[in-house]
Amino acid sequence: MKQKNPGMIRKLAGSVREYKKQAILTPVLMMGEVACECIIPLITKNLINGIQDGCAMSEIVRDGVLLILMAFVSLGFGAVAAKFCATAASGFAKNLRHDLFYKIQDFSFANIDKFSTASLVTRLTTDVNNVQMAFMLIIRTAVRAPLMLIFASVMATVVGKKLALIFVGVIPFLAFCLGFIVYKAMPRFRAVFKKYDAVNNSVQENVKGIRVVKSFVREEYEKEKFGRASDDIRKDFTAAERIVACNAPVMQFSMYISMLLISFFAAKLVVSSGGTYLNVGTLSSMLTYSMQLLMSLMMLSMIFVMVTLAVASAKRIAEVLDEVNSLTEPENPVTEVADGSVDFDNVSFKYSQKAERDALSDIDLHIASGQTVGVIGGTGSGKTTLIQLISRLYDVTEGSVKVGGVDVREYSLNALRDQVSVVLQKNVLFSGTIKENLRWGDPDASDEELKAACRAACADEFIESFPDRYDTYIEQGGANVSGGQKQRLCIARALLKRPKILILDDSTSAVDTQTDAKIRKAFREAIPGTTKIIIAQRISSVQDADLIVVMDNGRIDAVGAHDALLASNEIYREVYYSQNKAGDDNA
View (tube, rainbow, N blue to C red):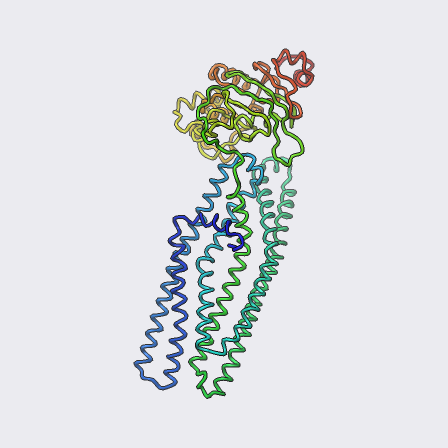
């Protein structure tokens, strides 16, 4: 795209792959088309001069047939080149989207935090489309235009002699103007894409939270917010396009000046030399070559505009492709998790190196395999951050986290995460049947295994009430099931993995206390050997756990059983009494 950044070009060129043949043949065919188009004016010159000199009819027919033949050959080259170009550009865009999507799938949470979701969507759609269009121009028009410029200039010099000097003055002027336009437009195009991200984010939030928007009657507010973001894009695009729009008048000015100068000096030469220095046929071909030359310059200006827009997109795509995963696989990874024990040894963690304070500090916690552990604490106390380190969604800043006696950084990521099943705070279901959603946990699970997992998660009771039962279609995001039903389906999906460690991050908050108790009882009976870590806001959800961890401000405030914490820990006691009305234990 831009010669001063060859690394970016190589990175994007790697996505051409199986379409390399079409990408190479397109410019080769364009060379044939340009050669034919440059020969046509030469034949026309001979035909006109022959007619003027009173040549035989056979010569006229010969030149006429040759003209028709060259036109058809040129057309053939152009048609095949267009087909190959379309195939190569579409294939390149497909591979580029593939590479971006696969790269994003391998990102750690830290990498995803660096790019917003809306920005990644823009890069996969708008940016890829811009680069596709630029690629199409580069392998076709960007080859045709310079070749035509060179061939037409050479032929104009051969045919028109001194008249070709007119272009020596016009071309540098035009090149300077185009360069200035690109220089001024580029920063504005870069700004536009950041605002595209903001618009995508606004749309994504609005569509995802449409029920909240409507329940609070905030449609007008959302419309105004979207309108402001959209208007910002309009202003930046208007500013950029206003600059780019200068391209057309500059081109037209250069073209008409050239035509006027050629016509004036050519007529003068024809008259003064009596047709010996320059005849009518030569003048005709000279005018055609000048048109070809100037049209090639106009094509180049179009390429400049498109590539100016695409360079900003290409840089954003390359940023994603160049992003290094913050979680690296060890050279000789451990592929077996011995048991469900978890050990936090002097762990501290911050989400980024620029963060001023740690999200977790001085964490020492030891969980035996098969234990049930509850984690409570206020908002922002570090509960979710704590459990994300177990499945290595992030790496610790200091200390170590061990699962089955082995540092999580020594495991194969797939092996570790297959044995650490997490039901996150924000439950996500995908469009498809209940069966298809559940089999995310185990693609080979039998129908009986699906039903057993659903019984343990207390999901079977509502599934059986659906007309299609396990073949019931789930809308995108689980829009057609309740929050509690969604949570129970997600728990059943996690159970199908048969993990050594099961983590529930406030994943029963939308179910009633009776169902919550049933789920915990089913866990004790169905997966007694699995380590269960339950983050909850309700004391009733964790009070029968073997250990309860009380978090406060990124630190462990206390660890113990329910009775001991109730007697000794102020935070735990305050939460308990606030939920149970001064100790009336009816949880």
